Image (cartoon, rainbow over all chains, first blue to last red; front, top):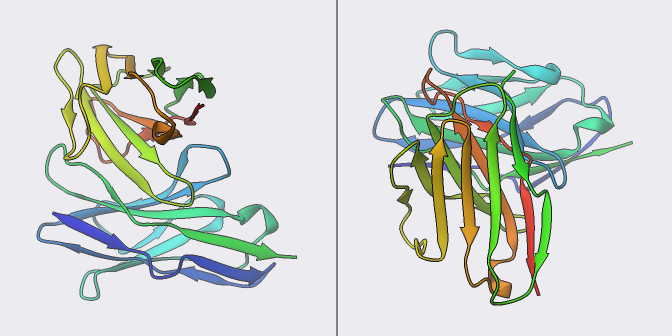
Length: 114
Length: 116
């Protein structure tokens, strides 16, 4: 079994400032990690994913995340946010073997302030 | 990229009636489809996993007789909410995974169900 903790339910940040959205996970097996973005009344869009290899993963819209196995973290970062980045962000984890269900965190609402 | 559609995008129904939500993979064959439920300002909760041609596997606490899932083809899965009640009002999202494995699930846009 695995779990995901997103420590911040809301993160306000001024436009063009950097942002970090925190995600910690727990699992007894090797994991795949994901970040999704959800705009109001829409489904989820994949921002980036870590499956293996380099621990620094770059995604769409200028986002990146770093997998830290020792700290069991997968924090999402962007050096300069835009108004259009205002959305809900979900961290997710699943075991790396076969078909396993994805467990989502509770989400972080990123509010970009003009 | 892979596209998943849902129909309808929103639906209002009266208490006691049934409503069917369709989930289609438009440009790939989905061997596995997942149904999630999302309450306002909350995360996605997996309801069930369905593989084409076989019975769905429901998560603990999900009533299989109330939420009927059919995955009749490699491009279509349906969720039927039977005898709907106001507490069934929610945002329902499906996702699909293809032959390449489920390292990535492709999500539909969601269906907003309101039961009056």
